[in-house]
Image (cartoon, rainbow, N blue to C red; front, side, top):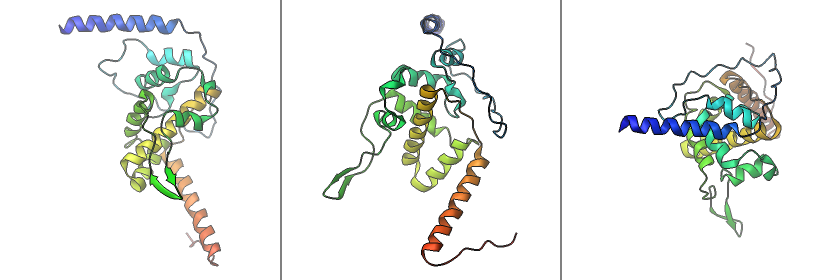
Length: 220
């Protein structure tokens, strides 16, 4: 029975490969990355047990015109789920905010008489959003920019809200790549920590100036 199922799955893989080959080629030559950007590390992941037995990532990049697997936590199976749900035409959404709202990853606070009745997102059944939530969970131990951002949000908001926030972030990145053909370049966790420190210092200077004080840095 095991061998029979393996043969059936191999037949499905071949049919999937033939179906993907019918899509027009949208792959564009990617512009060179910025010299200041760190090099992209190749992901050394073991293929899933039910993953197709062909280069699915290359096929998806060819028909989408962008390599979604460059985004940390997005593998070929996740990219396939997203593309099969949202399609290849990003013109159906005005902007990335509308795209994230359609996926049910935006806040939908119910307010009546200046009183907040309910906080949270809309109850939307969307396989693409579910796939992005699962992908966001894998960022906990990632040493990438998105991983550092997720850990910061997780410590401040808690796991459920942090997962939704990072899924929202992933949806916006995917929209930009599919709509404008942008290439995602990971800046690394250290770059995020530096930006976060600068933002905190700027915030402290504004609060001190509002209270009539001045912050002076200690000599190193």
